[in-house]
Image (tube, rainbow, N blue to C red; front, side, top):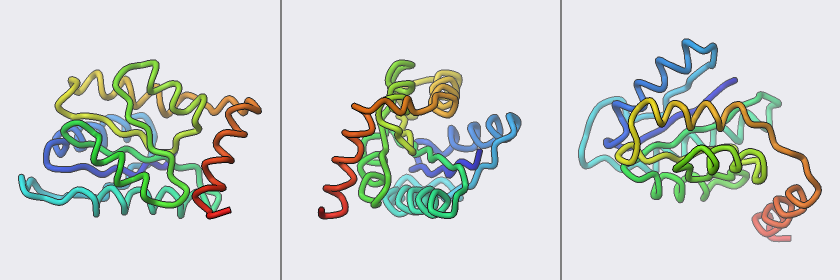
Amino acid sequence: MRIHIATDHAGLELSHFLIRELTKQGHQLIDHGPTEYDPLDDYPEFCINAALAVVADEEAGVRALGIVLGGSGNGEQISANKVKGIRAALAWNQDTAKLAREHNNANVVALGARMHSQQEILQLVEIFIAEPFSNEERHSRRINQISEFEQGV
């Protein structure tokens, strides 16, 4: 699986940890920044670029997901969700990580680096990656409603 990852300064160490661990599991990680610690960095650019890459991969037929990290994950989720075609979900426990994929077919997971240990975050990401979309009609219908609004239909 190709995974695009971005963070702010609060998640930089966690980002490096996830890149190492997920690469060991056979995933292809693409880092959208930042490249160095800067407590005054502006995360929207990094997260938007990761989200744009997920959409580009999906349009090219490449299976891809995204991970955006921050202190809480909230701003990063909001940034990613501004990209047309992105469904970014904030995961804070195993159920929200699973349901983001199963019910919402989320293609980006947002996580709070200051909210969990590295191992907890890794577990949430693994759950998110592994869980397939259910394809249940009610969930597909709702996702289509969101997409139609996004398209201006």
